[in-house]
Length: 242
Length: 123
Image 1: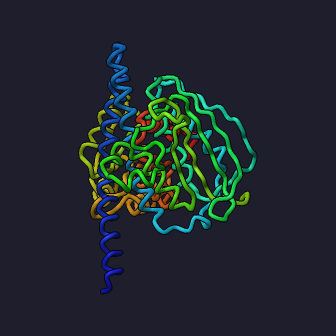
Image 2: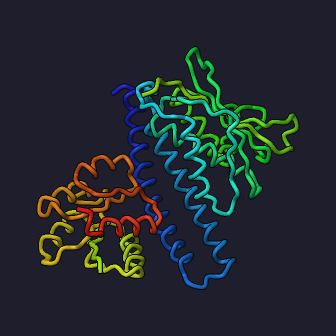
Image 3: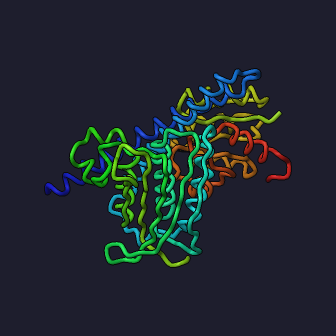
């Protein structure tokens, strides 16, 4: 067996075990979520207990997204993005807003659409929709405030010689980790793996966007990285209206 | 009272569903830890459950196969499919599952689906 075949076999084996592991973690998340729901449904529950249970639910949901991200990374390895079903990028952002309000019931989340093009279709099927959700989830987790306003714009541009849709989301309160700012996501995680574990959402977004033939970046809006404010950019291949 | 058969290979998941469904006034008439056990219990039981909550990845016989076999015995049986594997949804629906919930889901969503499909208008 050639070295390449052996490597492929190892990768497939690894993907198989990770899939089993992810499945078990999701089952555990189900149990935690269910019992926290029971706590919330207890008559006469006090305000503080409710708050703690709701925070617990938010973390379970995030844990689920992380597992889903990993499964998605496995599923999108070597995929031909152009063959994936087109989705409407603007609608995916709108759906993400509703989802995030469920994820973070105690936060006041508002999406302001600076532009709202009609027919902004991109290749990527549900992989692209999940990428969008993941990007916003990451952005919100980098924002310590309870009031979150995302200013979102869309533009049609070219990326690697192909037509693409670009979504930019600006959050004036997001605080990028200092190791991330100014270097670009790839440079950051390839230099030191320990930095990546502190911001896996950013790393996953970069990898999944890449697998879909696009890209993801996160940058501070200031020259001074200690100041809050960041722009999250997702680039995906443009598709014709289905 | 709506009766339920729970099929899942994880004991703690079976316990969770049982705890919550009983609290909400449902009758848990049985549990099974794999598709084959579910088939046996279903076939041997004179009284059929109103709803079956069916997992997919289980030893011996998976949920899709068990759903097909159960619907062969009783095409009117209502099956809610629940799985951490979202890619199996299409297969589950083709096997005859009336609803699909990806794990983890809110128990309120499960209850809402149970109420909806237990209504006499849904066949």
